[in-house]
Length: 129
Image (tube, rainbow, N blue to C red; front, side, top):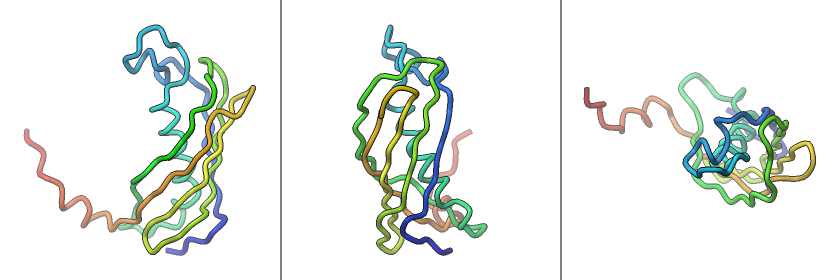
């Protein structure tokens, strides 16, 4: 597992109705929701590094610091870029920038933590059936 500063990822998507604030509980607000945009930012960071994961390793998001700067309509294309800018042992920090077809819509940072996946999952309670 080798992470290096400057690794880059991207996530592209066309905004659909399920990505809107309206669909996520804010009636009448038919634009890209901040929770959906946050997911897109995490996916861009994941794209920068996931090819480096051995089988039993993954990363989990641990902190987001984003500015959601502009509204994006359903049907517009969104492209989010992530660049690995800091490595502190197992903590990885990404600079995030994202754009729709008209303007910059997000900027900030996203942090991920490297985990041993079997150990991470073993600490969770067993599902109640």
